[in-house]
Every structure is written in C-alpha cells, then in structure tokens.
Length: 372
Image 1 (cartoon, rainbow, N blue to C red):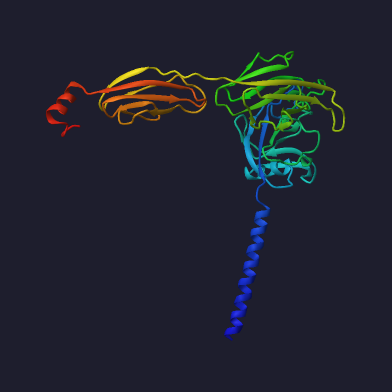
Image 2: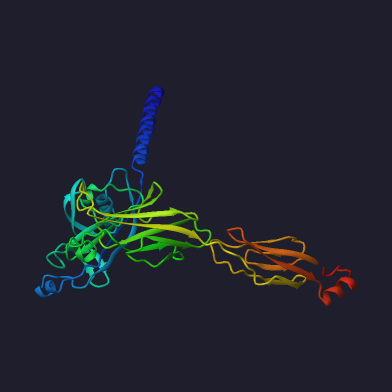
C-alpha cells in the first residue's frame, strides 16, 4: 500500500514539474520584445463648408486625446496589435474594418474624456466632415498600407492623427508631393544650429555643449508622406533615436517622396549637419583666500557644460572641499583647491589657513588642550 502511494505521489510531482516547466517556457516565449510609443491626437482643420452644411459633429479639435504612451509589444506583432493593446488598457473602445492580421482600418475610438467635450462615446470617420477620419504615422511618416502590415519594432513611434481633409490638413497633401524639409528639431535644447534654417541651405553646423555624447534630430517636412533617413557614414538611425556624436561628426538627413511602394521618388532633399562640440574653459571666482582655522568659504566656477565640476584639495590637513566647492580650514598652512570639469579643464585657488588672535591665545596659553 505504501509503495502504491509513493508511486502515485511520484507521478503527481513529476506531472507538476512538467506543467511548471511548460508554463515557464510559455511565459518566456511571451516576454515583451520591447516598447512602442503610441498616441492619438486631433488637430484636424474643420472646413467652413462642412460646418455650414451641418456635417461636423465636433467643431472644435480635441487636441491630444492619448498622450505619447510606451506600450510593450511581442515578437511578430504589428502596430495595430500594439495600438489595440493600449486601447484595451485605457478602457477605451474601437470600431474597425478588417482585423490585425490583415487590412486593419481604424474607424473610430470611444469611451474617453476630453477637455473640450467631456465624455466622448465615439469619435471617428465622418464625425468632422465627409472627408474626415483616422490616419496613422509610423516613425513620423504616414504609412502607405494597413497598420496590420507594419511590423512593430523597439523604439517605434506610432501616432494616430485625425484629419478633416484626407490628410491635407495634417501634413499629407497630395497636391504638394514635396520631399523638402521645413525645419529641424534638435535635442538637447542647448544645441544650436547655424546658420538658421533655410530651404536653400544644405549644410549646417550644430554647436553642442562640451561633454555632449549624443543628440536627437527630428526632421520637419512639407509633406509627411516622405521617407526620411538619418545616417552617420553607412549607419542609419531611427526617428528620435540617440545619435552618438563627437567633434566633427557628420549627420546626413535625406528625404524622398515616393508616391507608392515600388515606385521611384518624385522629389528629394538632403541636408548635412556637422557637429561642433564647444570646448570649455574654466575660471574660478577667486585665485586665493585666507581662512581662520575651522572657518569655511564657498568657491564657484563659471562652468555650464555637461556634468558637475569635481573639487579636490592638495592637502586635506590644511583644507577640505566638498562637492559644492565649500572649503573648510582644518589646520595651519597652505593648500591648493582645484576644480576640474568634464573636458579636463582646471582652475585653482590657493588657500592660506591661519589662527585668529583668540585662537593663538588659546594655543599659546592653554597649549591647545581645551580648544585645539
């Protein structure tokens, strides 16, 4: 009887281990492959004729409906899958044609709050005129196919934009098939482009603070149907990705207007940026100071570059300095306080530490036993 019970328990625990392993494998297989940033916005320009005709239910644009939100995606998914995951997570609703495996078309979204309209039960095609509806941008370009045909990739940006004129009002005007740039946004904000942007200028310099290791470039286009690439040498970088830079790095940004997949470009544009990293100098507010024993004074520098200034003392038995430049006298003598920035520039201040009259009295009369 005992042997039988042992066999049953052995079979049970073996089965439990197998089930646990299978579950672990399934869980591992479904682990997120990365993140996609998804947003919804309505800045569509309502047509006066449509408003007067009474075909516009939402006269005022809703603005940002869903701000940029990072959403996990799994291997093999498309941007429609990721979009619907966010919609479900937010408790919103959708209506659509097709499905995420083929020919997905987003007709409407609903069950959300909006500052202009309060609770919105449904907002979609034809709600702001006969040519209104949802369009989608993938990495700052309007896609030429269904969202179900665009594979999700880590770092992607997916923005659903509401148009009132088949895209012409939101940067996808088919009467202007231009690949021309209209400007550039550069991060960090301290970066400066020279000369100022002009459509006729094709070479620029980007001045960045010392210590800058990467920048982000975001092209602004006359028509966002255009394909835009960002390259350093032969290496391409995605929209809004960090581009590693050093002094002299050249970034080539190219744009092509390709009407439909497989066709040749009907218009092109190209701009080259050369990165200039500004070399800093470092100056301290004082070249020398005199302190009484145990007293303090804070030094400062004119550094405004990357990171923080590093402070050191040549003799901590005379003076110590903290990370903010506060110098404290610790003993009679002289020491040099040094500030160093990220680029290796340095500035120095000589510190002389003395005893005050009262301190000398204490040292001489009482031999320092009480105070020193």
